[in-house]
Length: 356
Image 1 (cartoon, rainbow, N blue to C red):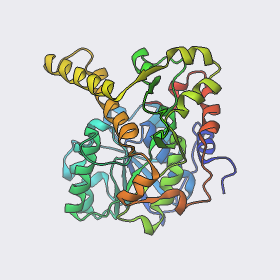
Image 2 (cartoon, rainbow, N blue to C red; image 1 turned 90 degrees about the horizontal axis):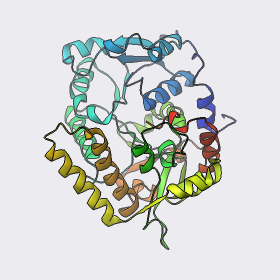
Image 3 (cartoon, helix red, strand yellow; image 1 turned 135 degrees about the horizontal axis):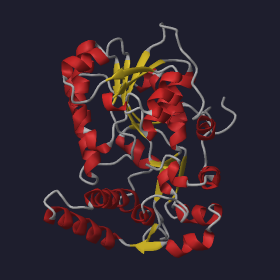
Image 4 (cartoon, one colour; image 1 turned 135 degrees about the vertical axis):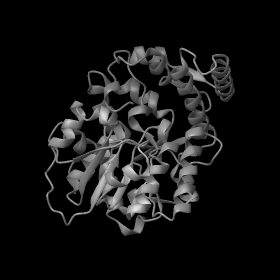
């Protein structure tokens, strides 16, 4: 049993080289998107579990990046490749792979199809599509709809699949303090408190420290019970209003944090969403703030899912058929929100701690 919480333990290992695994009898896991924040957590968890050899598909333009070199030093087999390379070339990248884990970004969800076709062709035994979000139904968050479509695609391929969702990352749940160097518009989003979150029956939400995700993923993928199942990884379940309270208590900038809080209603979500869609349409796909507007649309859908529809709860995940990772692996010590907040706000710039 890891003595600290899984998140604290794996966060402390982030800058260290991983253990070299030369045992060819161990199953080979290929991580796609290993340079991103979620992919790094997954890769680290796989390496330190001692149960896998680990490879990573890295785009040719990223082969010489410092993060890629860190993976090499950790013993990760770096394989050049791109989601758009076509099935035949991707089959070469997948040579000898037992398990394929995708952690690609939201813009690349639909682009995973050739990767999975190649995995089917070479006999990969299990795939994990890029999910890593909150449980819920179609028609609320567009990127979730794309992920659900990929699940259907995998079912049609008859490719064994494990879906892993992680709820709301604690890194993005907590409001960012004024000292954070992130875009001020993004920081403002983290300070929007919901008028309907402080009701007599406030919405609760599942929370996970991103640093702990890899520890859970390693256990899930070594467990035959999770094949062809959906798994919900979570560490704490708290009212949405707990974010502002933790920020004011632990940030060291309580008065400034309180002054930045802005209340938003369900009607505001609808208005902000419509405004962003209208501006994007008027710009003909070339609006100078397109990225920010897309983020606003996603945020409105996410807020509606969590706070209005109350989809990101353990009760809802079970109703949808998810298996509870904490029930499967009770020996992994979870971070509670306050413990994580203490670590998060001790950082010089918390926005650099896996926020994006």
